[in-house]
Image 1 (tube, helix red, strand yellow):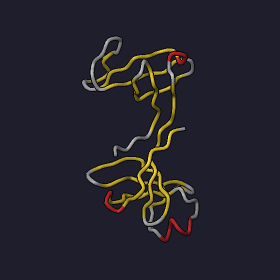
Image 2 (image 1 turned 60 degrees about the horizontal axis):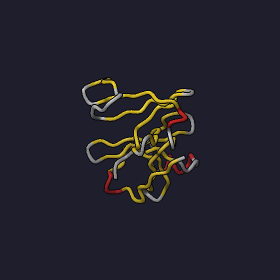
Image 3 (image 1 turned 60 degrees about the vertical axis):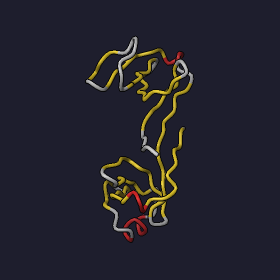
Length: 122
């Protein structure tokens, strides 16, 4: 399962990474296509009216690690960057999580120790 965190939009029967901006939505893809402008060598963008998008959602990946709930922020070399979503500071401290901000705790978790990876879209 790939780790996703961010907006997605359905347009003309395909799903794209997206970035909403008022009455418009920027759609992104990795390869050239008609109407898409090159941003970098593997990133192309097309701006469409929000009314042309059939679905716009924010996708996040969640998991369980050491018996507690986490949000997956990213992945690197078999490790997942996770953020504790249980809301209990004593539990976060017991787990040895790094304080990132007030009430926000994060860590690098070995992917093999993580269970229940699932996407949620809102």
